[in-house]
Image (tube, rainbow, N blue to C red):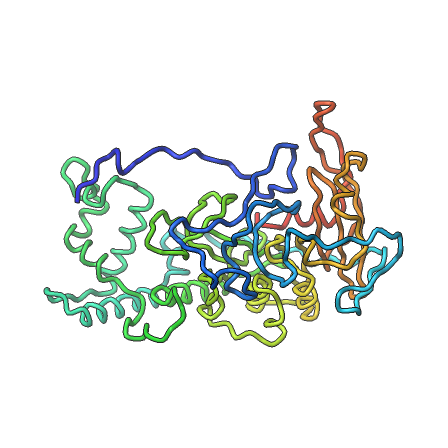
Length: 461
């Protein structure tokens, strides 16, 4: 089938630049809603609605109401997650109140923890070649595995021609795929065509051989597919190899957990194709990743609906099973960290819950994250509606600390944001510059230490 250049390039899409932390921003511009939206080809059924557990980590039917938190992503992590009826906030100036379990007491005090050790990036003895850095993660063991599985699949498929490949040819094939991802041409055939021939590709492999390899390349044994619940079964070995290599890299004391999109514009993946409007690549496969403060990803979980953690082969403890669906993701990613006792995790309100903070605290791991009202109920913070009144100046904050050492703080910036933390407290207070429309100038705004810590460490820089 021939494809015209007009059909290939289609209409040029508008590029949207999204700030790294849209809700704690440096201006008063209207923020975009970054709710997950479902695949247009996916029909919502009762299996996808209001079910507590990993099946609800994806798109939800509730999308219209915006929450005043840093990143608004709808999920059903808690059975109390009902946006239409927010929990009432206690307005009495008392020093403490009990939580839903009747045991947590909140006090008007700050937390004061010792600072985590600063990670020092040691310069390498020498700079390696790009190929050496590539083979550090995509090593000969992976090439050997792919070669074996490809030959196995070709034998099982019983293709007409006798097929056999080796590790050298497979490495060449991988190199060509990477090169094609950098040097883009409208069609694969153009790399061998007379007018547009690319020697770096055409001199290494013929077009016919490349298409044959692309058709039969495999990463697993297809005979083991029946009975598995892993929707990523065919690529799971590749991710396992890569994750094992990523975990060998030095991990910083401060880690962040967030969603990552792998761009995919096709329509054959069903509801595995997700959409997060705040990401650079809005449509694609969604991963939950844990990264160091320098941005290096060490571990990841592939989203696939209710079988997300089953596909990850994660054996949940009773404590983890008691957590909400998205909080379970953080607990699984945290379990592979090199040192829990000297690490702090940062995450947004999609993952945060009071139960998650308690779980990590019990494992001597610190946590800081934005939170939704319906996941931290029964505390004495000022209500969001009261904080957002025009009479309340920008920079106002209210905070309480539980008898377990969990800080809950609400701070007014462009919008009101709520955080939970067992790492950094309110003091020392500092100031940040914010644009004021009335005076048309930037003015200093009071800012708690925990807010600055979250902004500096969330997302991996």
